[in-house]
Image 1 (cartoon, rainbow, N blue to C red):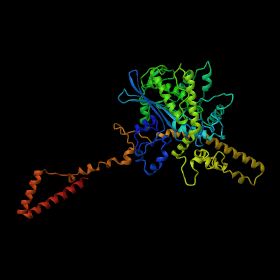
Image 2: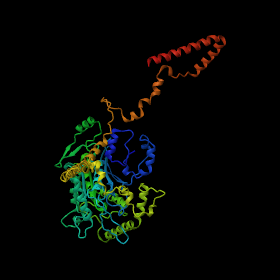
Image 3: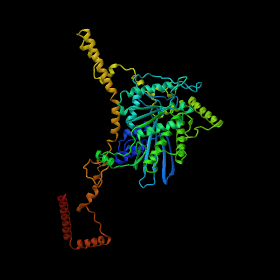
Image 4: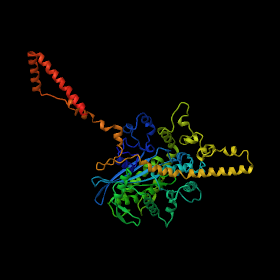
Length: 594
């Protein structure tokens, strides 16, 4: 079966290597992970992959179309993470483990079924809440609550943990498109936007230029209200830049797009040679890196921005697959209009899951308005706002409690408070704060990191003069600072290395034309396939061959035996002895041959 928790690129890599057992599903997208964890612990990895199936929460849309005589299947898949999952006002920002609210992975897949083997291509992008500590306390009397920075994180450890996770999953570069407002008369979105920008500046200070986080701030509200500015063109420029940075996956590329925009034939010989040389699966065109888009809710403006990236990626995918000759798609074409409907539908599904109503801002092609004009459009927006307000004020708490119970964040015990009596679920998702290990840690806990004992200075300088004590203290502080800076500059290297090592356990299938003397396959090592045919080897021996006489021969032999016994019983016994001797000789000869 197809693993929905993994991207098309990951599934192609595992299909090429064919490991046994298959790679485990991504537990961050399996919402039944807590319910099936005990079953997985009871069974081993050789059997649980056939019994445990992940339950994915999100949306899936598929359409079939024809373009330039090709029969194509276009799919959109949204996977919602189970970490820090919840509803709109109850889950904002990031947890202490680096998990953000409303974390959704979007995958755009196109399949050309005209060819016999079929050509596949996919493009990945994600959305998620701003990875800083901020909240919005909803109430019945306040439809639009203020934004509050509820925790102080001077070294931005949670934000760093979030980008560390992204680098491990997708590699580098990480492109961030921030759609929040950059200027307001009464600061609201600006508060969390400035904190996010400061966090990225701090983190980039410890990363090499090649792997720095690429940050792009685009004030969607300001551009849409300006007469001389166009939101669609601004988003298209950012989409083109981001797709060119990360690329996309294609199973069998025929063309490639160079820097000037021209198209050249794609050569796969060098990539195939590299894959055989390394011994791990390697495709000639893979996506390395990810585009991360966010606004305040990560619903309306984010969906429009992701559509722009999807259109740009689709145009390049069609060129690489050899279907079109230009990477720019006509906004009025059938394929773009179909993609608009698909993004509108999947955006409404994501908004219903997180916000309680369909999306406010609808995706539209260039030259069209995103909303319905006139009084009808205003009434529709008002009805959508009322639905969202009612859901956030009255029903979101019950939905949040159900998610916490289903996902295993709250486990009923005899001495615990009931779930409905908890004031909030803050300590259910922030484990370090609940156990007393928050941002305020003692310096003694950093002793193993710095490699210096905090009491060394007092013990070594107790018998010396005061000036020597001061010099020793200064040297010790320098050592600690150098060790801390070294530790801060190493985390991203470990993340990139972990991303590269993900496929090292995969081995290519053996090629019968090439005697490489590689190690035995994983299936043969676990199952000993040479022993599955030991019955054939057993029956190949001459003394073990079964013999069956026909009915006439059996009847004739039985009659002859009866007559022989009546005439000469001693002679019959001699024949039986000769048969036994002959059987023993055949057994000895077969053992000698072995």
